[in-house]
Every structure is written in C-alpha cells, then in structure tokens.
Image (cartoon, rainbow, N blue to C red; front, top):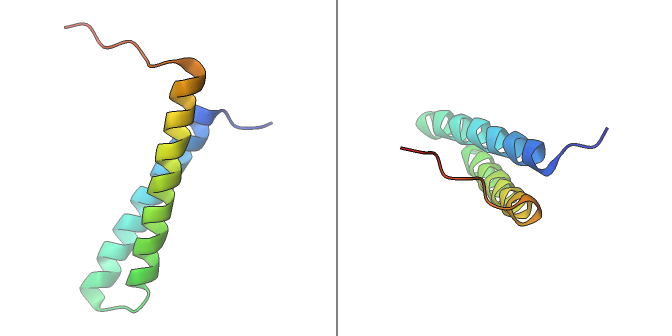
Length: 67
C-alpha cells in the first residue's frame, strides 16, 4: 500500500535526524564518513521539506491551534 505524503515526509524527517546524529558522532571521532553522513542528512531534510510542502498543497494548511 502506498504511503501518504504525510507519512513519507515524517519518514524522511526521521531519516534526516538519524543521519544528523550519526554525522555528529562521526565528526567527534574525525571519521572520513562524517562528510557523507552530513550530505545524506541534508538530502533527507530537503526531500522531507518537499514532501511536507506537497502535502500542504494537496490538503491545505492545518488549522492553527487555539490558545
């Protein structure tokens, strides 16, 4: 079953967060893979943003919470 746009955006946000954490840990160790992990994190973040934007266009913006 295909994922909804919202589910795909959430998955990409989670992937980006994981890649950011892995990159941060690698940077602390001076690992050469830290650059690649940072690049992946940026790619996931960009794709998540695009999916979120698409979901908003398809379904409209969610209502603002009441205060």
